Image 1: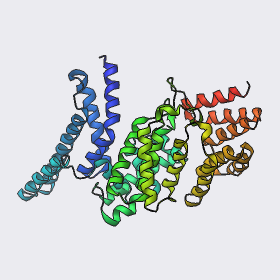
Image 2 (image 1 turned 180 degrees about the vertical axis):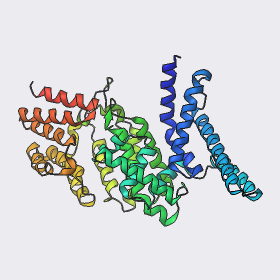
Image 3 (image 1 turned 90 degrees about the vertical axis):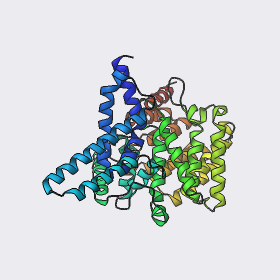
Image 4 (image 1 turned 135 degrees about the horizontal axis):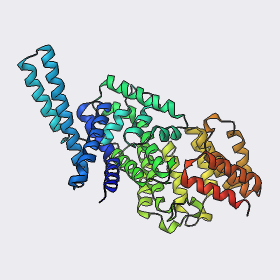
Length: 420
């Protein structure tokens, strides 16, 4: 394998293992910044050694062992320096040995899930809700600040500053990097669910890059959702979140063509939707409803996804039911994005002009300024209303706003269709 290909393979392995690596190291050293540094050190070592020795059978374990040794060596070095300066003596030396042994054993502790523990830590009450979500997307999702900013409909500088401040606050709080219990776990649950779903959404509809979907991120979010449901089996909103992700993930294989082009839900081959995932989603949704959670935000969104899953053909979709569900959702979780999706549903149920009336109010919402789905939705409604010149202008404007290459190609294709 050529050196360039080896380096590319190493970087791919690191992207896959990065979140687990940081999670395990953070639990070991109790410091997010230090954990990220150790992970990067392990990557540098791999880039130096693997081209000669080959990629190991278990690259994740190799990276973890390398970072772990670096952490222990650093602790010993820091302790020796402190002992020289303070002339502490034998007692501290014994304590140091004990602590090094604890560090050495820390990564073998299988209590709970380290990634889930890191998410709960990133949702520490010392952080604002916005900082919790941004930090976890950075640590667990491996997203850039630009991608996180687009997910939050905010500018990149604000998100970067938020992450830096969050790390500093966590460093002062000295958390345990473990899944909390009792009321503390319940208090952090809403932020944890928000973060997991944001990770899923970044995989389901990538905000930037050449790929429309990132299935690995969706799979990770689903895995975390299943773990969370196992930890809290009587929480209807946890089940609603799990149902939502399972049903949406059932469509992943049909969202793109073989060349990577975007395929809208109305044109997807529904015979290829994953019936196993749909069945899992229906089961989780039924459990959520049985627990009295039918009107929870995630349960309502799962019910929306279920409407699509039940329709054997696109023309069988019950858009009136979807519109009614969005009417309920905007009451329990009001947001400009929910209002946008509600307008789309009303346009499908009651005609494009009905949707355009609802969109007119959203054009004045600052939160959606520069948000590509807004002019894209307007373009679709105008197209269906026969107002092709206006539709072309809307699609072209949406294409200029998106940072995803596949989405841009799709929107430009729709703009070109207006001329035909």
